[in-house]
Length: 336
Image (cartoon, rainbow, N blue to C red; front, side):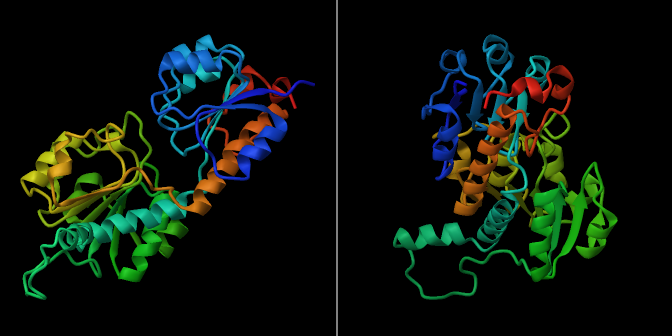
């Protein structure tokens, strides 16, 4: 039996590239400018794809690449894939949930603490050789964290992990989610449900942990930012478009809110002339929420195993489009 042909658009951590190559003929393409035409040309003779959240796999690509059987995205989010078209064409789509929960929660707290205590700003101040007076009462004064109110929008796995970390800071934890978590989780984490407007009005820190969809697009906009305290901070380590970036920039520039910590943006990478880059009351990270060795390795493991299992005719670990099972059975996927 010939090996399946697989395209990989990222440089995965070892040993997973080697393991994938044991089962499949792999073409790895590392291209920061992977256009639609390039993707179609590369995918036309491929049975599987391991891609990134930055690779937009739309209906045209899916309909053109008729040999494709599985799309395994090296990410939790899958809004970059036309799920409806994939399902109609009998293409299995998988993602990598759970394994990056702790790393993303840690990064959320790093952003929160950095912006509140002005860590990035202070670091740059020292490096620029501006530190001339050893200490002064009003110098680099930031916001308090211990005992403050944390509002979490999206109480899924990552939201819960962020809430667990807040216990050590004796914070009051509010949450908003369209789907309420298990009552045991609410009790154990001492969570208080609020509607979105109440949460925005009452919180000192607001942390976003929602998937990107039509309901969450620009969930934080000009109107919502005006509901926040002028002393409050916004943290976003979910997806960039859940925040209206233009409105946020205005709110930061005009001190409508105190600051923000961002790991994601409406356009990535952020453009060199983006006005956010000129503001001192925002901490900017380059989409590194999952950026720990353990998480990125586990993501590679899950992405590879999802693809291999499907091509073996087995159930994948994390299938996104369950309805595809009605279109094409796993038995028909078997190539290994």
